[in-house]
Length: 282
Image (cartoon, rainbow, N blue to C red):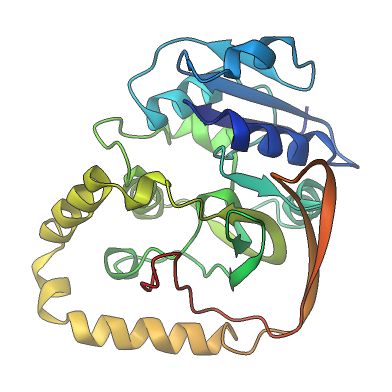
């Protein structure tokens, strides 16, 4: 088994169907898709247990990160990842990650690029990942989780599991922990994934805002003191990585109106700047 993809699920049936479809049509690699559903009562259980494309585990958990940990402990693949219900893989994503991992055996962690869309699947922006570094991660965490892939060997040997005290911003703390403990990361410059801003994403809710505020108070003193300099450094890294000069590209995804067939889109003028459905910058 090459990949184990885990999807934590709770009352997200509509989006979960699109997520499952985007994993199921991956070609050129072997994979398993583990769905950890926390006893959803929105119709998910009417179809998920019978869907042969996934391994469904319906059991109560302590939140998203606990669900991912549970799935990863069940994983059999060489490379693990998690894909939330409101996210999808693009065609050929897993094959591209597999090829990169084979060419770079020294890398524990792979970060790739993500397209952001609205609830109808229309393009909002595109985010290219950058090599995660400390203390830069205290200032900006701009890697979307659907573009992160980890070797299971590193996960198990170094116990790179999530701290379940966090409910919404555990991604950032997980990444900082891995980088601080010497995880070797590599950047795959390839559009692998899609994040859908549905208007109901967890990272926009009150608890996520509270956890982000708590995280700010945890920054080391020197980061707080020189924060403007770190922000300037972040912008220089963005410039050096070419995120403001993206080339036109095509992508295809499943949508609510087309759950069984991918819809192709052409992006003539891609951009990094992300303005959400509420008009606010992300």
